[in-house]
Image (cartoon, rainbow, N blue to C red; front, side, top):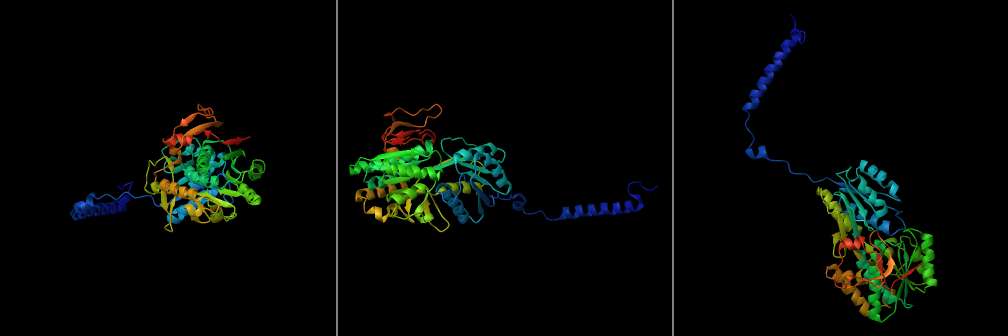
Amino acid sequence: MKSRLFGEKGITVFAVVVISLVLAVVVVGCAPAPPAEEAVEEAPEEMEEGATLAIEHFSIIEGTTWSGAHDRAGKRIAEKYPDVEYVYREEVGPDLTVPFAEELIADGANIVVGNAEFMGLPLKDIAEKYPDAYFVSIIASDLSTERNFIRLFPRQYQALYLEGLIAGALTETGNIGIVSAFPSVQVIRRTAGFYLGVQDAAEMLDKDITVHVKYAGDWYLPTEEREIAATLVDQYDADVLTHQTDSGSPLDVAQEKGIWFVGKDMDIVGFYGWSDTDTVAVSFDTRWEVLYDQIVQDWLAGEENPETVLYLGMNDSMTLADGTEVATVDIMNDGKVGVDAISPAARASIPDEIVDLVEQRRDQMMAGEWDPFTEHEFVSNGTGLDLEGLPVPEAGTVVKPAGEMPTAEWLLSQFNFDLEGMEILE
C-alpha cells in the first residue's frame, strides 16, 4: 500500500535525506575541536555607534543670544564628533515639546534637549517611554530628574561678576540699567552675580552706584525691551545698559544713545557682528557645548545612569574640533577673551586696579579657587519671587554669610530674592 504521506518516491527521498544527515553528524563529530580560548571567548561589549543630538529651541535662533548660543553648541559638538549629528526645531512651545520629540526620536534622535525649562519639562513625561534615549532640560528653578532625564545650567554668574566689575568702573552717572525678562530664580541668580561685581567696583573706586532693573514680562519682546531700555537711559540716567532678555533691542538703544552696553550669552560683536567695541564694552560667552559634551560622551559610552544635574562653571572646559579649549563661560568681545575682551575704547576709562582685579578673579575662578557667591554675604532686598513654601526674606535679612558657598541645589532652586540695594522698578 502507498504511503498517504510520502508516496513511494517520497519514501526513497526520505531515506536518502536520513542517510545524509547521519553522515553529516559523523563528519562533524570527527572534526577537531576549536582551541579552548576560542571556544569560551565572548564578543566585546560594543559602544553605541553615533548619535543624533536634537535641540528644541524655545525661540527663533537668528537674532537671539540664548538660542543662538545653543545652536552654536550643537554645531560645535557635531564638528568634534564625526559620528554625531545635530538637528533642531525652532519656536517650540510646551504643547509642541513632546510631539516634536517623538518625531525626532522616530527620525533617529538619541538625545533630545529642551533649551528652556518651561518647554523642556514635558520631556520628563516621556523619559520612561524611551528608555534608550537621553532627555535634557534647562533649569530655571525646578530640579526634578529621572534616570534618563538630565537637568543642566552653567555658572554664568561667575562671568557676570567680571562684567559687573567692568560696568561699575565705566559708569559716570552712577546709574546702570538692566532690561530683564521676569522674576525667576535663574534671572535673580544671574543678576546677583553682576550686581556683586558692580558693588566691588564701587567700593574700590569710592563710587555710589545704583543698579536699576525693569522687567519686560518675557524673554523675547523686542518692542517692550526697546521701550524699557530707553526709559532706563532717559528717566534714570543710566549710562551703562545690559539685559536679561534675548533680543538685540537694548543694544540698539545703547548704540543710539551713545552709552556703553554689556552683552550676554554670546560674544555678540565677534559671532554676530552686532554693533562694535565702541558700544559693547564686553560680553560674556556661554559655551553650552561643554555641558553637551559630557552628555554626548556618556551616551556614546552606553552609560545607562548618566549624571542628572550638571552645573558647570569657569573651571570646566572642553577642547573643540579645531583644538581650542573653551571654558563653560568666559568674558569675550570681538573674538578676544579675558581682559583682552575689554573694549579698547572702554579700557581707556577703566582704572588699572579694576583691570588687574578682573584678571585676578578670572584666573582664580578658572582654577576653581575663588567664587563671588562664596566671598560675599547675601542680604535680602525684600523683593524677588515668592516660591511655594519659600517667601522672599524680609529686607535686611542675612540669608547667607560671607565665606560660605551655597549648595548647587540652593542656587538653582531657592535663590528667590534680590540683593540689598538693587532698585526694582515697576
